[in-house]
Length: 338
Ligand code: KG4
Ligand code: ZN
Image (cartoon, rainbow, N blue to C red):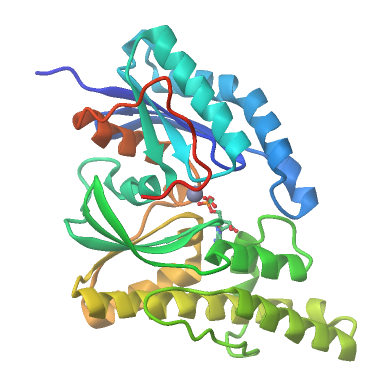
C-alpha cells in the first residue's frame, strides 16, 4: 500500500489563527484560535489581528501536530492561505509556511481561501460528495459569490457582491442593534423567537447574478432610527422580531439569486460554504427549497463553515496531487481572485 500523504495547513486570512493536519482526505486535527480582542471594537482591527497571529501561530501549529499524533518529520507538504484577506494577517501565515517548508525541505502550497471554503465539502471519505459540476453559494464576512465548480482546480465566479458581503450585512445590522462582533451568530440566535414579517426592508434590484447589501443596511438603519425616535426602548422590545426580519431579508436575497443561477445553468447540485453558511435559517430554507424542487443540497459541518485550516488542507491536498507547488518568492495577495 502506498504511503498516505500528510499535509500541514495554515489559515490566517482574517482574525482566526488556524492549523490542521490532513492524511489523504481525512482530518487528523483541526485547531482554531479565535481572537477575542476584536469584540470590543465592533469589527476586526487589522493591526491587532496580525499581532495576535504572530503570538498564536507556533502554539496552534504545535497543538495541531500533537493532536494528530504525528511527528513533524511525517509531514509531506505545507499549505497556507495566499489570499484573499488582510495583508498583515496573511503575511504571518505565509512567512511561517515558507520557513517551515524551507526548514523541513518539503513542498509549499499556496491556497485561495474562497476556493478552500468550497473544497471543505470534500473532507472525509465515506460521506456523499458533490459531483461535478455543482454550484456553490459562498457567503462569508468578506465575500458573497455564486461559483460554478467544474473540478477542484477549475472554478468560475458567476455572481458576486457589488458592495457589502452577506456576513457584513449581518455584522453591520448587529452593530446597529448594539451586539458585539461578530454579530451574525447572535442575529441567528435571537431570530429563533421572532416574526420574519414584523418588519420589511427595501429589496435590492441588481441584474444578473450579482448581489448588493448596502441598500438593505441603510433601510435597516432608517427603520431602527425611526423606531427609537418613537420609543427609546424600541430595540430591546423588538429584538427578536428585528433579528428574524433582518435575517429573512438577507437570506431571501441569497436564495433568490441562487435560484436564478440554478435556472440559468441548469445545474441542480447546490452547496453552501463560508461563515454565513452556519446560519440556521439559510440552512433550513435551502433544505425546504431543495426538497420542493428536487435539488441535491450539500451543507457543510458547522466546524468547516467559519474560517478553519481543514479547508486549506483539503485544497492543498488537491494541489499536491497536481504537483502545483509554490516557491519561496510567493507573496500573499489581499485581493486574490480565482
Ligand atoms: O468565513 P468566515 O469565518 O470569515 C471570512 O472569511 O469572512 O465568515 C465570518 C462571517 C461573519 O460575518 C459572521 O457574522 C458570519 O460569518 N456568521 C454568521 C453565522 N456564523 C458566522 N452569520 C449568520 N449566522 C450565523 N450563524
Ligand atoms: Zn472565510
